[in-house]
Length: 107
Length: 107
DNA sequence: ACAACAAATCGAGATATATCGATTTAATTT
DNA sequence: AAATTAAATCGATATATCTCGATTTGTTGT
Image 1: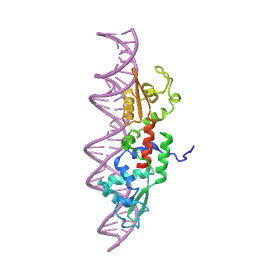
Image 2 (image 1 turned 135 degrees about the horizontal axis):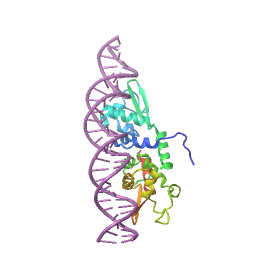
Image 3 (image 1 turned 60 degrees about the horizontal axis):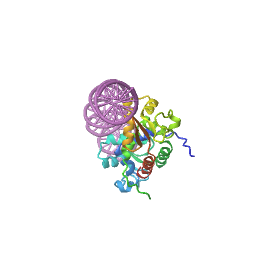
Image 4 (image 1 turned 45 degrees about the horizontal axis):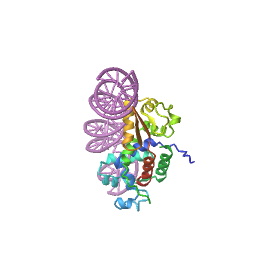
């Protein structure tokens, strides 16, 4: 029996994941090199993908995508790293795994 | 590598699970004998719990709970069985497992 | 200091979800 | 057949989410 110390708010994560675009973003970030153009201001995808590329791919407005990424970050599904003017987002694999394990017990 | 034939609509299930009462109901139905009064019109909980008992426990209106249970049934999280005037709902363990496995791959 | 730009935040209108009471449907009992 | 009852559906209002353009904030380059 495994206990998870950190209280993960399944409800809030579920809310974030009840939108197809946000699910898509999480998926695309699995393989940035397949889903996004090459990076310009950083050498590789190790810190993830910048907001503008994610925005381009979705076709939604800058404010909407920034809002989506902020809420995904707030529930710890994504990790944000700032390099100069740009913010890069990547998956938080630990927390995603934690979420699925929590579901396995709680659902 | 496992492939799931049935196309499970993760988005729709997530929407259903972005409500605390519906999450609670799914949880209570894990152990009906601990969470609900004894059955009256059927011998045991093998077909689940009737709508009125679930309604009592939540304190929400009859129409709201019926609506919730219908939507949980529509995405196959619950199985409905009618006995006379009463409808009994129980967990669809296969589909719940299927959902979590799908998340493990798709998320 | 100032102009330029990426990202975040704000404010607003449109759409969706939550929740109720009233009505309808289906089954049971008299 | 009529009355009763459990559950589902309908119609409506309140609250929340979606999505945008405009503004603000933070960083870089001149």
